[in-house]
Each structure stands twice: as structure tokens, then as C-alpha cells.
Length: 397
Image 1 (cartoon, one colour):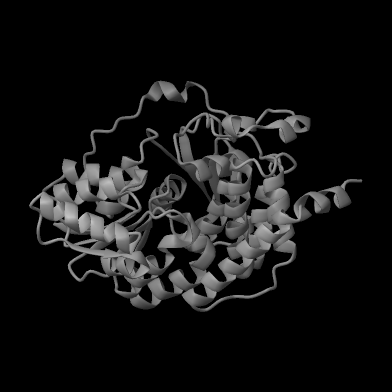
Image 2 (tube, rainbow, N blue to C red):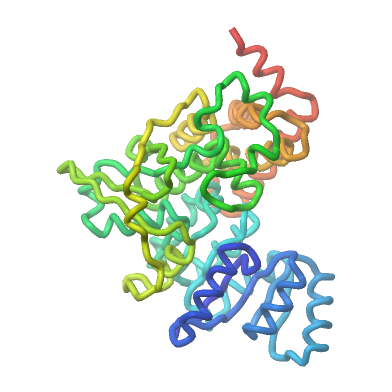
């Protein structure tokens, strides 16, 4: 029986993980949950799963949850809150496996604490590795902790890498759908609306990741994540645009062989793979071979998707530049969603922040969070004075 600490239990990955627990009650149980701000769902999950620890975002949320659980006759659940509460959930002694699925850097401290506590960790949060991958990977190596990717592309690479040794790998290929603007003329990008950007052709996701997919910054973050997870330089991590999203990623070996991972577009499969590794068990998920009738692959257009170029540049420099890439993007995406900037204003803002970021390689989580805060402040200041637009005008020939 594997007991799980699920960080981000009310999000899509968390809920998919709980469906797997429900499907395999003889294999998995819930030890702790970190539910964030969704009080109603937190109460429902605590009532259903009876975790030892339940963490919510704020102290007042914890008070509400305790009151509602008492009224429902639910006892034995320790309700905690904030970062300390999430760390408590991640480091619970009886937890065997941590699912890190809190969006953004909010789950960084808890993920780090879980690794330091020796917990096998499934990573569904790419921002943790982007911002603090150097630290997390070092801690995992020193403590002999296994990190398993849940993100579908990296999970696919992990599966393909079982076909050879790391030394035999020539390149890994991340597939990208190309988002909704793969063929849109560049001169129409300034007129892209929020509603159009949120219509992803393949996946149903949260707002930030959907916009990141449209700019391909999401793929850029995955480049950095892949460099960390598989200990490869950026030049060995390549991107191919694959609109069908049937092939989740590929690994090219030194002898010219290429292994690809194909499956249904259902996150339960990579989650189950991580939870049961190194086993493979029956999932009930099947792949329709008719989907292989039409497979297309295109090189990415860096002029259309400048965020991809910025991500490669940040990956080369590492440290503070990777932190700033992610932080500036979060601020810029929020600004786009609120109508403050245009769609191309997202990469303009990120580039302006990166140009002003000082070379640095944090060695502690507190330093990472401080660098993240500085980058966010810089991005907000640039947006407030319209600096990103002026920088773009200055660069126009």
C-alpha cells in the first residue's frame, strides 16, 4: 500500500490522482492533502478520504473547514494552513509518495521539504524545476530520492529512456501542439483576444497554462525542466510542432534509433505510471490506432513564438534567468488576461525583465523566492510605465 501526499489536491492533477486512488484501493491510500483556496472541495475531499493532514491556503479557511468537518461528524483530520501547512502535508512521516501539483512557485517550499524528507516525488509542477531545479536535483541526488515526471511530455521521455542508457541519447524531442495561433499571420497577433487565446485546440487546462501554450512559453519551461530532469544541455533538448498531440515526446539515440511514446490524452496515464514505477499495471485506458493515420511534425517558428527563444537563452544561463523567465511570464499573462497588454506584450515584457536580470545562481530556496519576487516587481514596474511597449518600439527597424 502506497500512501500519498497530494499537493494541489483540488486541481486537475490532484483530482485525477484521487480518481486513481479510488480505482486502485488495494494499492493507494491518501495520507495528506493540500487543497489551497477551494474550501468546499477541501471539505468534500477530507470527508471522503479522511487524510491525517489537510492543508488550506489561509487561517480563516482552516477555521471554516474545521467547523464544517465537526458539523459533518468527521474527526481525526488535522487542519493546517499556509506554506507551513503544505510543508507539513509533504513531510508527513507516513506518506510514501508526494504528488507535487500546486501551480507556480507556491508549492516550491513543500516540494523541497518533501525531497529533503526522503519522499519519492512525482512532479506535475514544472515551475519548481524551472525556478529551483539546480537545488532540487542536488538534494535528490544527495538523498537518493527518486523524482518522477508527471507532466505528459517528460513522463513520455522517461518511458522512452528505458530503451537505452543516458549516455546513448543524442537528443530528446518535446512535442508541442502549436496552440491556436500556429498558422495565424503574424500581422494579426496584436489583435488576438483573450477569448481566442484561451481556446486550445487539444487540451482543456487552466488559464495560465493555456495562454503559455498559445505563446509556447509552456514548451520553453518544459525545455528547462527537461534539462534538469535528464541532465542534458539545452542543445540536446529539441522541440517539434505536432498538431495531433498523439506522440507525447520522443528520444533519439546515438545510433539513429528514435523511440516515441503514444497514448490517449488522459493525464491519469502519466500519473499512474509515476505512482507505480517501475511497474506497469492495467489501467483500462486504450489507444485508438486510427489516430495514427495522420501525423504531422513541423519545426517551431521562433519569429512567431519568441518565448521559445527566450526560454532557450534562459536555459543556457540558468539560475536567476530561469527564475525571471517564469516570474515575468506569470505577471505578463495576468496583465494580458486583464486587458492591460496585448498578446505580443507577453514576450516583450519577459524579454525586458530578462535583459535587466543580474547573473546569479541561488543555492537556497529562500534565495530563489527572493529572486522570484524581484523579477515580479520588475515586471510590474515595467508594465506600469509601459516600458515593454517602448522597448519593442526601439527595436523596430
